[in-house]
Every structure is written in C-alpha cells, then in structure tokens.
Image (cartoon, rainbow, N blue to C red; front, side, top):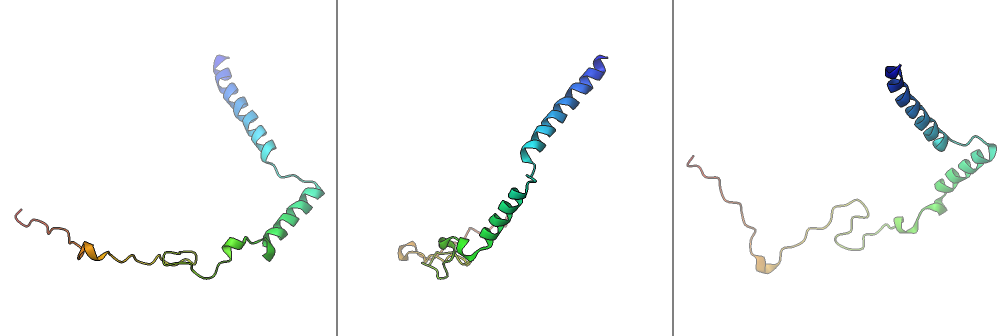
Length: 93
C-alpha cells in the first residue's frame, strides 16, 4: 500500500496544479468577452493606434539605425596613425 501512496501523491499534486493552471489561463467564453477581444484587435490594426515614435522616415544622424541600415563607420582620428596589423605567425616551428 505504501508504494501506491508514493505514486498517488505526486499524481494528485500534478493534477491539482494542472487544474489551477488551466482555470487561471482559460479564455473567457461570454459574448461580451468576444466583443471586447474583437474591439482590441480592431484598435490594434487601426492606423491611429500606431505609436508616433515608430513613424519616423528620415534618419537623424550618422549612427541612426531606425530604418534598418547599418551605422555609419567612425573615421579614425588623425593622431592614431595607420591601422596596425597583427604580427605574422612564427614560421620556425
């Protein structure tokens, strides 16, 4: 009987947790909830619902990536000199 208890207790705990999770996350089925859901979807698709900060069409500066472009490369300062190359591998091995 004790072996059965070791199997039955976890099954009951999982069943209770699954029931609570299902009850908390189920979709409401009333007529009013369907109307509200439809209204939220229509409001989301409305052109007036788009945030104004996402409607920008011109970049504001050299590093602006709002339009999906790459940031502009930064020119090296004149005091840094030419770029350095990594040392060549040692061929004496």
